[in-house]
Image (cartoon, rainbow over all chains, first blue to last red; front, side, top):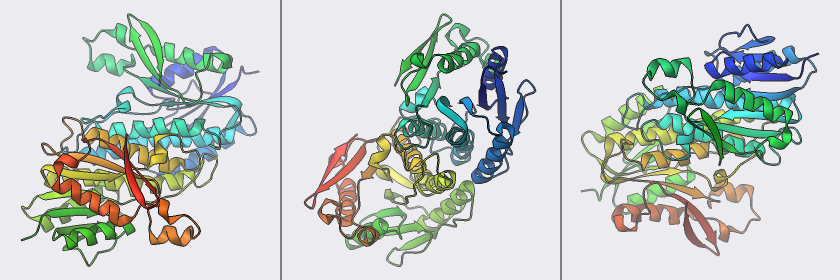
Amino acid sequence: MAQGRVVVYGGKGALGQAVIEHFKQSGYWILSIDLHSNEAADANVIVNAEESWTEQEKNILNGVASSLATSKVDGVFCVAGGWAGGSAEAPEFVKNADLMWKQSVWSSSIAARIAALHLKPGGVLQLTGAAPALEGTPGMIGYGMAKAAVHQLTASLASKGSGLPEGSTALCILPVTLDTPMNRKWMPKADFGTWTPLTWVASQFETWLHKPADRPQSGSLLKLTTKGGETEITKF
Amino acid sequence: MAQGRVVVYGGKGALGQAVIEHFKQSGYWILSIDLHSNEAADANVIVNAEESWTEQEKNILNGVASSLATSKVDGVFCVAGGWAGGSAEAPEFVKNADLMWKQSVWSSSIAARIAALHLKPGGVLQLTGAAPALEGTPGMIGYGMAKAAVHQLTASLASKGSGLPEGSTALCILPVTLDTPMNRKWMPKADFGTWTPLTWVASQFETWLHKPADRPQSGSLLKLTTKGGETEITKF
């Protein structure tokens, strides 16, 4: 029998893959949601990027319901996202803002729907924000708006009447820089000791499931800062 | 000769009409942007709600450029918006979140593009947020996300490198309840003395244009609270 069940939204991205590998080793049953399937997962729901927000919602919720049948899940981890820049002067500003909204807010909102419908009472819903969006982000306006929306979504989900199951915890991680293969490729000369290891994040997620007492308060924005390979959480 | 030139995005809404009437009386040349034309305005750009964000951006920017020719504007006032509820449990949550994003964030972002391209140095760009979105909004999650994005957009636009012209001011009003015909229709027994008069808001906008010294600091979120018919601004 599985240790528990988790949904990983963005399960084919760098962080998503690390999270799935980690939960796999711990004996969890895993459902991955992404544009492509993750073979390490026990089940996959494929996202069609051509669909509208409501179409994606409908098809993903149908896929999740078929995969889970009557089972409830212990955690829903949404690590989907992306990055694109642009100030108000940039011709690509609106195009990029549209992409950022789709990658961060569509995914986070659908993850919230999955949690409302399939999370166990006392379960964990994790979303992904960004530390810079706590202030203005003039060079990446669309990114900042999307992440600020995810931060506020976390506050809403932690509030009474949000529709999440009784006793559940909504948390938002705010990574500074994650130690991904892509970041190593594009910033080969950076100090990797200041980047947050994906395995650290994955292990943190599992701790939240196993030890409810160790969970930060629901609604917290959790900035992840790494120095000399050691990662600390600052709560907002 | 006109007293100055302003763009009113949402010029056919209740607040938009009041703003246009006010500036008309003060002798301004006015461009209205909305789904329908406002005959009191000097020029109109019609929004096609069926178009995508980037299509709307392109067509609206073309319309604004034709109307203005080489003239710059003193202010861009974005009072477009709407309201729809829904917790994470509500089947209509994503549909309504999509609508809220289009009504508040598409309009505010395109207004920011108009300001980047056509505002005079030292001009005013005004956006419309919402006081409840400063915290969680569990019963109206999509509305909260969209308004939180507009708040963060205001911070971005006020920051160096945002693409707005030199010395310009970006402000976001956070109305509690505006005294509109629709609100009177739906809440006939409310105390109208606690609702903010549209003429007060319009007059405030003109003061910001005429007296730069009276403008709140760029990036401010301005909560409008009315008691006994008197309105106060609280800055965030």
